[in-house]
Amino acid sequence: MDVDLRLLRYFVSVAEELHFTRAAERLHISQPALSKQVRLLESQLRMKLLRRSSRHVELTDAGRALLPQARRLLDQWSESLTATRAAAAEENRTLRVGFIANACGELTPRIFQEFARRRPDWRVTMSQAAWGDPTCGLRERSVDVAFLRVPVPADECFHQRVLLSEPRWVVLPAGHRLADHEVVPFAALLDEPFVATPAESGEWRDYWLAVEERAGHPVRIGAEVHSSDEWMEAIANGFGVCFTAESTARFYTRPGVVYRPVDRISPTRVALAWHRDDRRRIVADFVAVCTAVAEG
Image (cartoon, rainbow, N blue to C red; front, side, top):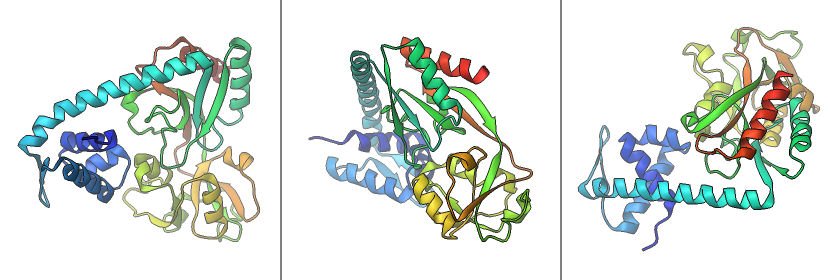
């Protein structure tokens, strides 16, 4: 019987958390979707792996027997996939870089120019991630390194090197009542509808909704988007406002939206991230280049 490794990964997360909501947050998917996938695994195996109630989740004897084997299988597959991709990248002399939106801002071209000078035998491919994956492909190992906006989900798996920090601004429809302010008071935005990243982006979504700064004040969601284009359209059409990085005002200009500074809100930081178990020389070289450019 062939079983999708993704289903085993979902099962392991629930088995370790013994809580569907926490496991769903860890996996960056919705809780109903996770429940459906676990039931699918049980159906394929024709056995119950978990006992569920409204307040409690526990492993059956079959689930307890499967858990260590599933962990071992997933670890072996991850190691095999990492080794295979590393070999392919080494053979092709290609470094895969993930990013969201404007990557590392104005530092990005300088980083790639310096990397090309130091390692002319290698080329770089850029992979833009959808907003449902704040790790930009690192979690699934489809990229080698990534420019991320912290906080990073599952950051215990990654090394991070913060490269820059900049203020968070607000993006507003051009006709918004606050659009003429030189600086928008944070308190004036608390009851506004917000354009949000997908729910599966977890703490990253909360960060861009400024949940921590709200001190318990609830968030109104006006729209949920999955890409920069959807985001700009939603704001221009009046579905909501959104916090963003100051540099976004330079990279994403379009009719119908305005950018304004906001008072009393923490800055945003860009970090370069890579897997802790990736000790390849080319990754270390790219980290060194990014660090040198950021500090220079």
